[in-house]
Image (cartoon, rainbow, N blue to C red; front, side, top):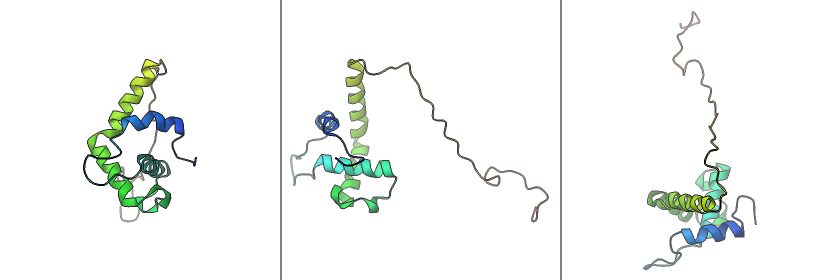
Length: 121
């Protein structure tokens, strides 16, 4: 297993929640696990689609499936199912909350600050 890829245990949990591997019509889809690992690689590295390693399949295949699944709510459904399973096992503590404390600083001109007596002010 490579970095950023699903373990066998993770894949066994997620696989039944994904759309059928072989559609009713047309040609079979590329392997869901390979494509999903490609999506995870992009999301975890922050790299552009064009930099996707070939081992995950064609960039067009991985990106189009990502956007189609996102539009169809596949990721939302997978998250809800995994949360429900974890909750049923007692693995979730719904009383614990996290707040994102990200701070993004802007240059003073971006914040609409008045110009002081500086050149051009």
